[in-house]
Image (cartoon, rainbow, N blue to C red; front, side, top):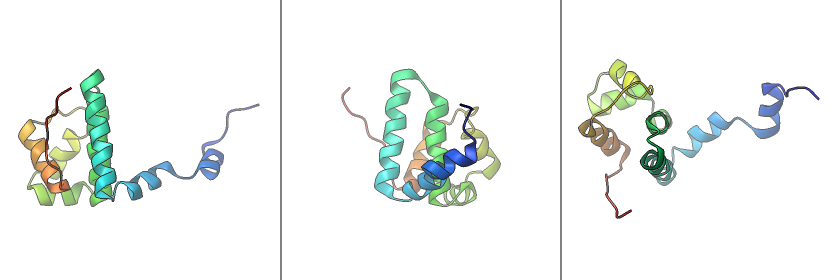
Length: 109
């Protein structure tokens, strides 16, 4: 038995990226997605996963261009920050979260 083709897998399971984009348009779902990424970051320092979650939410909410406009941050800079290579400052993350309609919180571990 050979390796399944990606088209066949997509046909059998659906398009995950399309599902995720639609799912993350819901604020509560996006918040839960981000919280899961933050929790994972706390456990294993997976910065790339956290930045990908933020990028996924940005794409679902209106795109990086929209986020740049709303945050008054440079679009190219946002692409870099969310690429996994970036290292956004807390004030930048706070600005992004505010645009998403989220509030930073701290809880007892």
